[in-house]
Image (cartoon, rainbow, N blue to C red; front, side):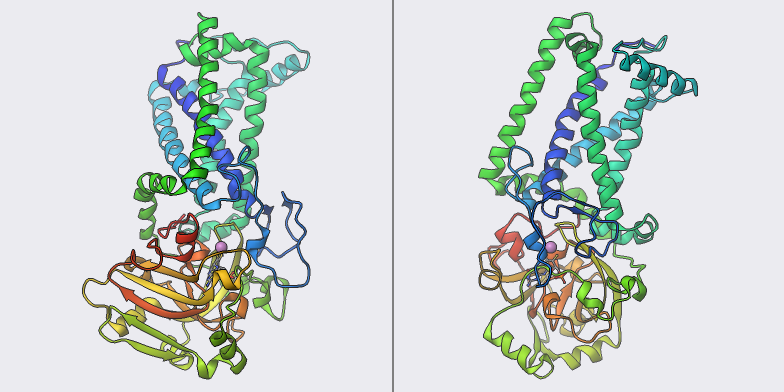
Length: 505
Ligand SMILES: Nc1nc2c(c(=O)[nH]1)N[C@H]1C(S)=C(S)[C@@H](COP(=O)(O)O)O[C@H]1N2
Ligand SMILES: [Mo]
């Protein structure tokens, strides 16, 4: 085999420096908004196995998951300052390029026979790798294997990074998507649950960073100019030119990070538009994956610990409304005072009491894994009625495109962490019509939903991230365009922050 490195392999190598560094930085941003790792998907406070924050958790009072956010510096995470939505956009934009180029690379590796560089074809390679390790420890550079460009340790580590770590990081990353984790819920469960997968995804991050550090040290030990020339020209015939060009390439990558980060902090909406172009076309395909829930009553958060009050264990995000209307209703008991209005672009506008909802739901329930964008999960059993069934009753007019939900909660007034106004959310019709998109009025067979989780009635959108599941539902409005509601992006967090309402990942 020609020992030189073909051009496509060199291009891929350079692109990977860009992709992986972007993925690591934006990944740290995502991790930082819920800087804890758990084994159990119930995320009970104080049971994390790792924590990357110095914030103390308040022990006795209700505190929201939003309060567990950490902001990292833009020098470390991308874009920094706790801008989760933008960090996610970068993660997904980069993932698009990373996965596409890895697939092309994989095909070329097989087609050209270059895979032989990376796959050990005999057990001797492992023995030789041990000897190579001894050489390194004796500060000697081991010889490459006869007829190959690498020594055995290089072959094994590169092979592991390309052919094991990369597929693993892609798959565990994909399972962070609520649409994917809930569609393949048997697999999610079989491997120990969503938080185990999240922890493995984190280990992949550590794997890449560790590989990067050792790889760079090795390049220096083997001879910086000599080695980087191979990365540029495919061989080390011109070490000076190659070394300089590679160094310039690295400067370019650093500049790219600085420019992208500064641009993002200045004009988040532009990054959002980029994400809409690059990410939405493939992420929208996930609308084809309805949630298939293989959870049972015995899986709900709290049940696993034998708690009498299981709903206590379902984490909460956001603070209950303090509107007089809501407080009065709460004091009176919701039963008599609450009415849900369904109106707008429908043939038959209606109002429904809790009893009406119960009668219509006829005992229907679903037990589901809740995914918050921040990363926490809980399992709950929700009793309720499918939005689709309510739509059948109200009969949307021809041309109806979206369903808008409004809440009693005013984020600016009720939750010190946020600014802005009333919480609202919307579903494109395809999502509203998914069988698991539910108007829920009971959690875990414990009677009404607790205030922190959206009493008395809330929305559940199981294929999307948690913020779409609006709590403290006031009204449902069918519309023929959503872009004239609020600031036009389809929901409170979409308007106030940088989240996509087509949020299936
Ligand atoms: N009205 C309203 N709905 C809301 C929120 C909120 O702050 N206000 N938080 C959202 C977020 S970010 C999540 S993760 C889920 C959390 O649901 P839970 O509190 O029942 O866990 O509710 C969503 N619905
Ligand atoms: Mo959330």
